[in-house]
Figure 1 (cartoon, helix red, strand yellow):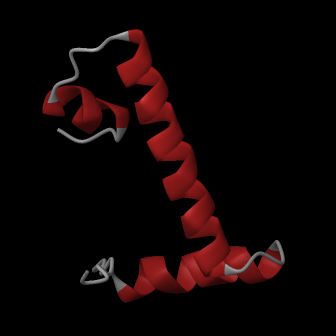
Figure 2 (cartoon, rainbow, N blue to C red):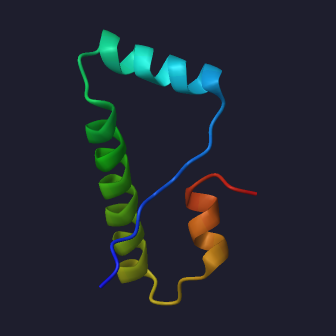
Length: 66
């Protein structure tokens, strides 16, 4: 099974600000991202359990995507 990777393109400014935030709060950047992913997936699972019909637009709204 191929192991997928997440590659995200963000501006240098945003990246530097993110790393600065992590350093200031003594948080490992990868840990923060893993926690965010876990929280997002758990929220999605809860939504699916409450409403079995789950559409892609619901996921996009959860992520604040338009």
